[in-house]
Length: 302
Image 1 (tube, rainbow, N blue to C red):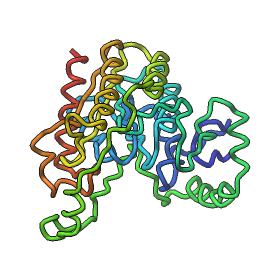
Image 2 (image 1 turned 30 degrees about the vertical axis):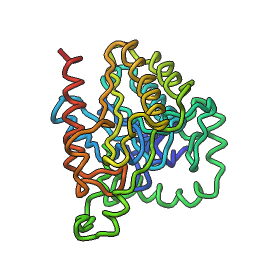
Image 3 (image 1 turned 45 degrees about the vertical axis):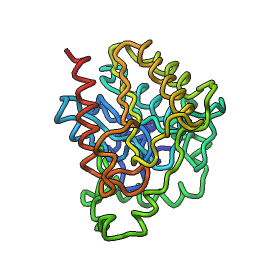
Image 4 (image 1 turned 180 degrees about the horizontal axis):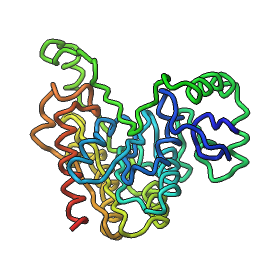
């Protein structure tokens, strides 16, 4: 607890800021409480390419990326709560949340599919202490000591940006026909919930009550390739429309809140070389989404 393995700020000692390079799940605590950032991006790999640096350049708000691949609403809500609790003074200026089909569930338990360190972000000190009693924490201690005691030890990137395109030399789909064929197969990503309720939307709205109304909330429906867009008149389209309405209604009720919807037919969504798969896009599309986020934030900053 004294060496604070993941820089949660719970130790009474004054330690070196940050953590050594590691997976985003355990780095969330350090990044999420960093006072230099007053804006944050939340979600999974479907919003991973949204650059905090680009958003800062476009809006003047210093952003941190608090994404973790494979996470679902329960984990994301816990991360938002951690960020808001550590940004009360001055308060957070902007929250950007990727709203994918996981947010459309009707299950109020919001189950998650992959391990996540809820104990690390918990409001309970007992949860935190209990979470420290783990074998992987014993393995982490030598690396933590090395980070704290050496000036040469590398620090994990403070803004959390993880560009999955970096160093990726994938050929275009025109050169890899098997990938193109897979991409052209229609899939349904509407979420399957036509009649509601939408507990993830309700819990996000309730959580944002702990933030000042002037804290902007941008709900982003991430881009998907055209074959993943719901076909009109289908149950998938009805489910997608119902989920969209749940978050559009949230945006209408809460001040300084906007829905940025990229899950609609746009020219960029017809270009296969801008996608890795149906719901993972490449840098050029990310830049377009960032421009829309910045435009939405610009309306609130006036």
